[in-house]
Structure formats: structure tokens, C-alpha cells
Amino acid sequence: MDVLTRVEQEGAYSNLQLNSALQRASLSREDTGLATELVYGTVARLNTLDYFLERFVAKGLNKLQPWVRSLLRLSLYQMMYLDRIPPHAVVNEAVNLAKRRGHQGISGMVNGVLRNILRNREQLVLPEDLSPAKRIALEHSHPLWLVERWISQYDEAVAEAICRANNEPPAVSVRVNTTMISRDEMLAEMKEAGLDAVPSSLSPEGILVLSGGNMALSDWYRDGQISVQDESSMLVAGAVGPASGMKILDCCAAPGGKTAHIAELMKDQGEIIANDLHEHKRKLIGEQAERLGLDTIHTVTGNALELVQKYPAGSFDRILLDAPCSGLGVIRRKPDLKWTKTAGDIGEIASLQRELLDSVSSLLRVGGILVYSTCTIDSEENEGTVQHFLKTHPGFGLPEDAGEEWSKLHSKTEGVGVQILPQDYHSDGFYIARLQRFS
Image 1 (tube, one colour):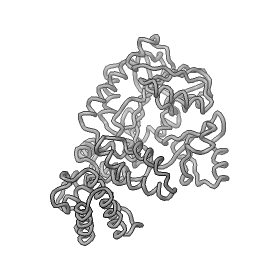
Image 2 (spheres, helix red, strand yellow):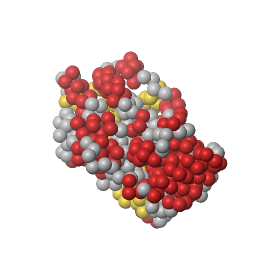
Image 3 (cartoon, one colour):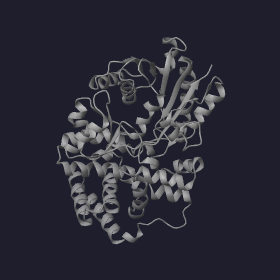
Image 4 (cartoon, helix red, strand yellow):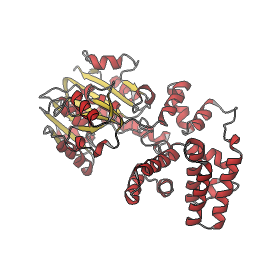
């Protein structure tokens, strides 16, 4: 309840709030799992919960104190979406919390609202006459403007599939550091340790861990043999097509997962300039490189728009612009994202992306490859940005030799780049475009 109230009141990130609350509370493993489910689930289902609560809260949800609102949402989430907590236990717990935090009047109101909902559970259904966008927005808990945007960019069925996938728990996937150990050897070690792990069908270096707890706390992680990374994100380094001895620029590199992956694919031979705007984030890249035993990564700090003043034109074999974006591809990991973003934000970000592409492209040598990637599924930020770049930069086009892996992926899409939606592979939504400089 405290975490949810802070997220709403202070605009705090649910994952950071939850992590610090869990560290203070030292709960059992089961209770940690339940607390996590309750926070993320309630945030993910926010507008659906509010839609139904409005019917039962006489003076309206907005008139309530924030913690009371959080408590009611939390309780209704358990009643509607979880099946192992008996409804009477939900009500008792909520009433006791209300007594401890508030007073008799508030606990009476909470008791009355929740018991009324239990008596009228058949009313927790959406009306038949909603427009398609409104139905999807309420059934799968997404803001209406976003659903309408996705319907116009894709279509109704695809938009609904995106929203449905955004409410599924994300898979746990790790990338094997192939400078230290092969994927097959790592899989064998994991199975020997009793983990349920399978090779990723998307990335040659990826492993899906179906059960096994927090992989960032494992010895394999500490010893630099694996990194925690989503499968979609693992495709970016492969698209860059790095080879030993190359000079590569990663423009917006923090926290350094893709940078490190590129270095691993180069067998740690060559040079990678990893740039980030913030000093504290630059340190994260350095820490990653150190943990993974990679020497080719050189970290620098600065605005990516100013890289053209630091390096001579045409001085890199490969450039990765993993651009700042709206993040709409990673909603299942960060459910608060969908409630905080606006259409205006997307327009602003898209114009920054165009500026960045335009600026860093001059640093690529003729014949070199530039990869543009984002963790969003918005076509204005993705295909729109790349098409605009190609129109204004006639010296760039699609690479002549794309390689087998990329060609297989690219053959499934119609645009210049590859748009991965969250429902395609049960991984993050991602966009990747490969461009070659011809003159």
C-alpha cells in the first residue's frame, strides 16, 4: 500500500520503490513474490480497477486520501485477478490496515465498499456497447489514447494482442559471455544445478531460465559468465555485425548490455567507444565491462549530438544508436510507463531521434553499418524516423549483404527495419534497423 501510494503521489518508479521497501521488510521468499505481484499487478490494471471502484465508492475515488485509494485498488486487484487469496481474507486484511493507518470511519467505509463488491460480483463486467478502443483499454488496462494510436498504426486485433501481452509476466533470459564459456556448456551447468533452462530461439547467445530465481545473484553472473538481458535486446549486437579488430561507436550506451555483447562478439579484439550523457551511467558501463573481463570498451561522457566534434568524420566501422525512446515496448517490465507517457512526449522524442541520427551518421566510414534501435513499438519513433533519415541522406541505404540471421528476421517485416511486438516472441517490444553508408 505504501509503495503504491508513493508511486501515485510522487511519480516514483514502482520497481525502485518496491526494491527499497522489500530490502527494509526482509520478507520470506513467498511473501516477496506476493508483494511484487500485488504492486505490479495493481499498477498494470489501474484503469480497470478504478472503473469498477467508481461504481462502489459513493463520493468518488478522487475524494479519498491517496493511501485509501491504494488500499481499495490493491484489494480489488486480489479479488478480480488472483485466485489463491480468499475474498474474506482480502476484506479482513484491508479493514485491519485501514484501522491501523486511519480511524474507525475509514475502516468502516473500506469494509462497506469491499463487502458490497463481493455481494455484487456479477457487476464486475464491462458493458456491451463500448467502442473497440474503449473495450480494449478497459479489458487490458491501457490508456485510451495509446490504444487508439496502436489501432491506427497497426489494427484492432494487433493493438489488442499488444495490450494483452503487456500484462503477461516477462520471461527471465540471460546472455552467455562466449569469451568465457559456450552456451551449451552454460546450459549443462544450469541443468546440473537444477534450473529449468532452454536455449533462446531468437538469440544464439541467449538462454531462457524458466525457473531459478534472480540470476543477477548467481555465481555465474558474479563471475562474468552471464548477463541478464531480454532476448529482443540481444538481437541488436548481432545486427551491428561486429568483427575482431573493428572500431565501433555506441552513442547512448548505458547501462552497457549491448556494448558488452558487441565486445563479446568481437572476441574482445578491437575498440568500442561507449558514450553516455551521464557520469554515473558511464560508471555502470565500466562496471559491466570489468565484471565480464572485457578490455575493448572505452567509456566517455557527453551529449551524443556533440560526438561529431570529438571524432573525425568517417572514423568508425560500425555505429550503434540505441536511441532514447518512449519505452513503450517494455511496459510489462515497467507498467507505470503506460500511465505517465503522453502523445506529446512521443513527438518530442521522435524529433530528438532524427537529430541524433542525422548528427552521428557522418562519423561512419563509407561501407560501414549504422544500426538504429529502440525499445518502443511506436511507428513515429521507429520506421518514421528511419524513413525520414533515408530521404534526407541519399548516401545511405539498406546493406547489400545482410547475413543469414538478419535476413531471416527481416523477411518477416515489410519496413526498412524489424519491428518486434511483445506478442511475437514473448519478449520486449523492439525496433532495429540496419543502414549502410554507400557514399
